[in-house]
Structure formats: C-alpha cells, structure tokens
Amino acid sequence: MTGRLYGVGLGPGDPELMTVKAARLIGEADVIAYHSARHGRSIARSVAEPYLREGQLEERLVYPVTTETTDHPGGYEGAIADFYELSAKKLAEHLDAGRDVVLLCEGDPFFYGSYMYMHERLVGRFETEVVPGVTSVSAASAVLGRPLVQRDEVLTVLPGTLPAPELARRLADTEAAAVLKLGRTFGSVREALAEAGKLDDAWYVERATWGQQRVEPFADVDPESVPYFSLALLPSPAYKSRVDGEPAVPAGASAPVEGGEVVVVGLGPAGPEWLTPEAAAELAAADHIVGYGPYVARVPQRAGQQRHASGNRVEADRAVEALQLAATGARVAVVSSGDPGVFAMASAVLEQVSAGNGAGARVRIVPGVTAAQAAAARVGAPLGHDYCVLSLSDRLKPWDIIERRLDAAGAADLVLALYNPASRTRVTQLENAREVLLRHRDPGTPVVVARDVGGPEEDVRVTTLGSLDPAAVDMRCLLIVGSSRTVAEEGPDGRSIVWTPRSYS
Image (cartoon, rainbow, N blue to C red):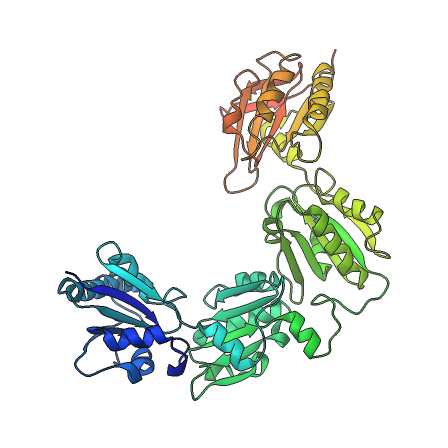
C-alpha cells in the first residue's frame, strides 16, 4: 500500500495557533517534509518543532534560487519548475514505500502556499488531504485589533509583485485589502496605496503572532527594514469610521455641502485613442469614478481618486450611488462605453434624479464616440443617409414593441444599427429580427457584423441579410443592416467598402 500525502497548514507563526488536527498529523507522520532556502533553515519546521517526535524522517526541499539570478537555461521559472519536479519525485519515493508524508506549509496550503505545487503533481497518484491553517491576513487583522470587513464590504487580497499601476487600480476599486509579499516590493506598494488615496488608512504588519511582530502605520515604515514576511492591511472602513469618530460618508468624499456634480462620461468604444479631450479632462478632475467594472478599469488611475466598480445589470443602483456621492459635495464621473446617451448611463442617472435622488447635485453629460459610428467607419459610410438605432434587448421593453419598430424601420427603408443583438440568454431575437427585415429587404442587402471594434479581438465582417448567421453573433457585436440603396464593393486592398448614397435620385 502507498502512503498518504498531507498538506498541513501551520498558521501564521505562533505554534499555539496551529489546529489540533495539524498537530496530531505532524506527530503521527512517518516523514516530515518542508521547504527551505540554501542556508538550510526552515520557518515551517521551526513552527512545527514542538509537535515533532523522535525517529521521524525529515525531507528538506531546498530551493535552488530565491531572489538571486540563475544560469539555468530556462531562467528563474525553468529552475523552479525543475525543482518542483525533483521535489515531487522525492516525496513520491516515500509514498511508494508506504510512508505517510506531511508537507509543512506556513499559513494555509492553498493560500499562496508552496504545497500546491506538490499537490498538482501528486494528487493523481496518491491519496492526499489538505489541512487548512490560519492565514497571515487573519493573523494581521487580529494583532491590529481591527476587523477586515463587515456587512457588505469587499475584501481584496493582492500580491505586492503586481505592477504599481495595477495595484493602485485594484486598491481604489475595493473597500478593504491585504497586500502580501512585501520585502523588495514595499516601494511600489507604497506608491500604489498613495495613488489610490489610501496610504493614510493602511497598516504595516510584520511577522504577525511571532515573538518579534511589528505593527505600525504603513506611511511611517522605513523601506530598508521590511522583510518578506510582512503585509499591508486596509481594514474595514466602516469600523474605522465608527471607532475613529470620522463622518460616515464614502471614502474620499467631503462632508455634505452643496455643489456636488455627476458627470456622465462616454469613453468611446475601446481604448484611450477613442476618448475625447473633454471626456479625459472630466475623468482626471473627478473625485470618484463609478461604473461597470470593465469600463472603470479603462480609466487611468489618479492619486486620491476613489473607484466604485459594479456589475452589468445594476444601472439604477449605480446611478443612485453616484448621486449620493455627489450629494456630499463630491465630483463624480459615471462612465459608459461609447456614448452615455445611447442605451447607457445618462438615462439611468436622469431617471433617478427624476425619482428624487441626489437632491442638489448637478448632472452633466459628456458625449463619446458611439459603437455604431466606430463600426461604420471601419467599412466606409453605411450610415451616410437616414438611419435608425435600435436595441434588440427585451430586458427593459417587450419584444412586440421591438418587432413593431423593426417592421416600421424596414418599411421606411432606413439603415439600422442594431445594439445588443444577442447574449447567452437571448438566442432567438436576432433570427426573429432578420425574418422581420426580410419582409422589406432583398436577401442580398449588405450587413456589417462588427465585434470589439478598437479592441484586441476586433473582427469586422460584411455579409448579407440572407446569409447572416445569428449563431456567429454575441453581445460584443454591433450590426449595421443596409437600406435598399446601400452598396457593398470590394476595395483595392480586397476589403469590402460599404456605403449608403446621400441621394435617392
């Protein structure tokens, strides 16, 4: 019979914070395995030492590199990959011999733990069991004496190895956070906290629960004194507000005063090259950025600016949040892809103003390049004459209204720009729309299918109404259906040129 592999979480460092099960398994195991640097010392072994017994075999897994350079032909990643393969073979030899192996792991084995690399290599061959442990994040919160999160607050855990701009964006998007793996990354983490406007709220916790633990405001820490076993903590902002006696207003907002403003900004259909100078200026001046997560991520981070990302189907809640922030005197930018007045957030915000939300807050709309304009420009000028813009989504209006409008636009011989043509849950609408338009249009009518215009997955194709395949269309597409006058020709480079004459003569 083969042995069993246990990935045992030791907790944050204090041996008394190890679970009863972890202590028992360590004492019963035939083999105790642990990682170490080339100096041979192992923090994991030192934590587990009170529970070891005489006669146990010890398997030390020595990293070939930690932070130094390597002459391995595959570089650092190649050296580490070879090390994991060799380590897995060492453990497999014990397991094949029928010996149970406990692999020690600081914190929790599946929370940035080294055990997981052995698990993925051995789980298909041997019985395995993972014993969870108290994480460094929980320990840091405990020694700081402040809760991580409460009620509906969101906790984000980040590695300090991320680039500073990405860290800043993610820190600005969350309420509470823990940033691990400091050490050499301390400077960029500090920069990211400052850029996100949260440096003054951050705490530094080093070796939580160890005898030499250290806790102090992050802004006061000397970068030269920071070891790897430390983290940055942004605890519950609601708790801070109550305990420190601060006003219970959103982070970054001032006390309630008149003069707040909501600016609904169109980002255009894709990257920064589609952003107008006016929109860029409004985004830079805002105290808060509110919007659907992927759109918020497109906005460059500014120091001190707070970001409030949310899901795709909560437009009303998003509008209320923006108006509430503005009611405190803040300047709030609500972002939309394309133009905010075209099936986007401008109407959602004005609906909430009409309902009585955001008293005293001004609302302005800053236009953006629409998806229809972007798609049209890619193929020529299909919108060169009268056209109709229509959404095929029946989430906010019944299909019979959509069908009547399609029928009327088809009878009027208008070019159509069709938004929201399909989704995972709406798979019949486009086929129905095609059948309605074929009542009035020749099957050879040009159709532009534009997907992710301006983005990394851009794909613009020209087909006909008769050949249009609804199964090849998803939510990221926009369709332009020509009128009876729309022309599709092959250009000198072989690509299709689609245009609608300005005259019916």
